Image (cartoon, rainbow, N blue to C red; front, side):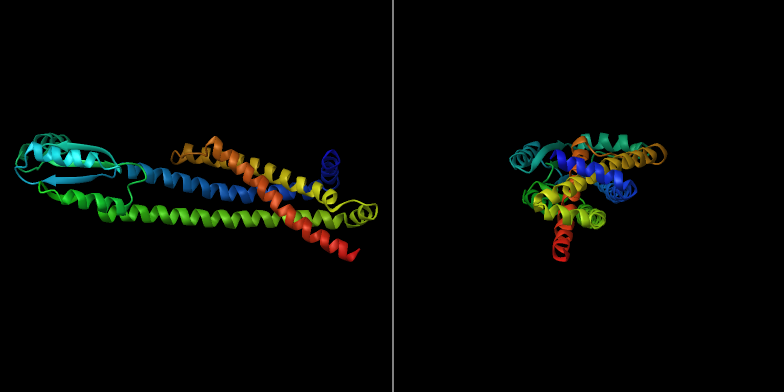
Length: 286
């Protein structure tokens, strides 16, 4: 391992421009991916905030008794998907309407607004299918006159979230492949520059693993360094946007660590395939 690290340092001293070019290219590739990642995180955060406001509201029939309302509340509380259930009496509904629509408070009458049951679902159970199921259960009660939850709006919300997830995954794969190709290209250039040296190492009995190890370490170090630089660039971009446009959410410490680890993995994979392919060519030509 010590010899491998020495070889990595020697390679950097011999071709510092090539090494810096590789690190810079990797950093900007991962930075572009990081920007898309920030967009995805903030979109998901905004959708989660909107999703938290989603609720099912069941309007009761005129003259429905409190016991009938309690029956609905108790039945809903027993469902595993339900987080909270509340009964809003006609008087409470009137007070809420007068507070929210103060300009119309004088023309509002308690007979205009019916009582209702407000049902909030647990996180992970707010998808359109679950909303339809709970809505159907509410409709089955004789005391319930109408059920509303904004079906079209909920379906659009989940459609946007699905599209964002698929697009983010696709971009992640694309930028990972780009980074692997870039690292592989820099490693191949380094091997080509040292072809004669590798042939001599082979003649004196060096194993394939001994020859490969410095290049694998070089790829991992470039991936880690590029990942760190990408995080710093993404942080700077996020700070500028938060100060001048809109406050945005940045990666968590765990996500940063995963990003740098992903850079190391990409560097290792790119180096492995490049070294394996190029060394086979060197052995054939030797």
